[in-house]
Image (cartoon, rainbow, N blue to C red; front, side, top):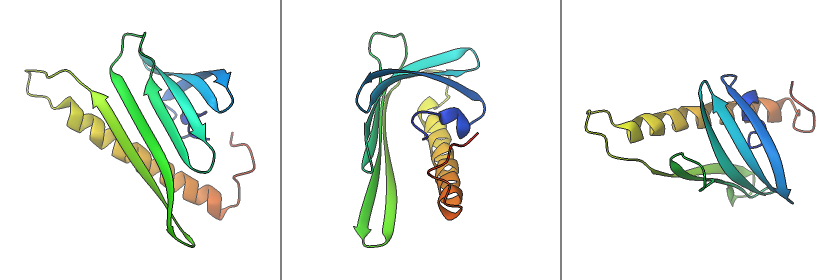
Length: 127
């Protein structure tokens, strides 16, 4: 759900998608005046992979969200990110700012998923 409609988890985003194949689509996310385009690959009940579309002028990114079950009855989600950022000489550590933002967005998403799971709303559409 978060892969196809991230704006449901973050209202400052707007998103459009274009189907490429079974469980593969291109997602364009708009944040204010900035937009970025990613290919998303879904592996149902296992993993979501995103990779920036190379022919666009944007930073190169890759992320993986994996569902893990270390033992029966315990599910974990592991988030992995790769970003290729230019070094800036103005003293601002953009990588650390992005990391903090991703961690907060992931925490918010997991909190929303827990609410949906407890309310048994996964099979319903969220408006």
